[in-house]
Length: 128
Image 1 (tube, rainbow, N blue to C red):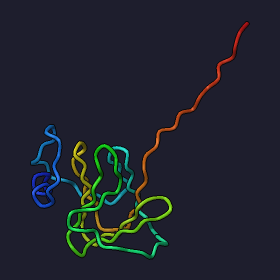
Image 2 (image 1 turned 90 degrees about the vertical axis):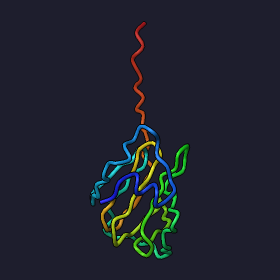
Image 3 (image 1 turned 120 degrees about the horizontal axis):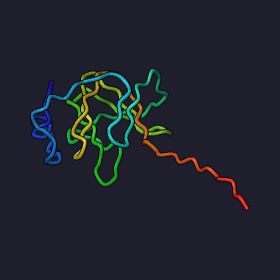
């Protein structure tokens, strides 16, 4: 297990002050969300252009604050697909965000998606 402080020291990425740096990051293997990023386990990925995650991490979703995937060398490959970025890890990897802290992901294959908000508009009847 790893803490936010260890992950920050290892990667150089920082977290907001309200987060407890001594917290241990759990490593999970199911569906996960971090803010507006969804991470979905993938049984099959048809992509073929796999690249290693660089030591400084890989931005999975950029915005005001990026969601950055970090992994030990040689343990995680990634690719771009039609629906988003996918990655395959052979050891725990970590998803970092300055406001949300970090999420640990167990070894496996994952597809990432951006969370979207849907609004359903309802037309009210007009009474004369």
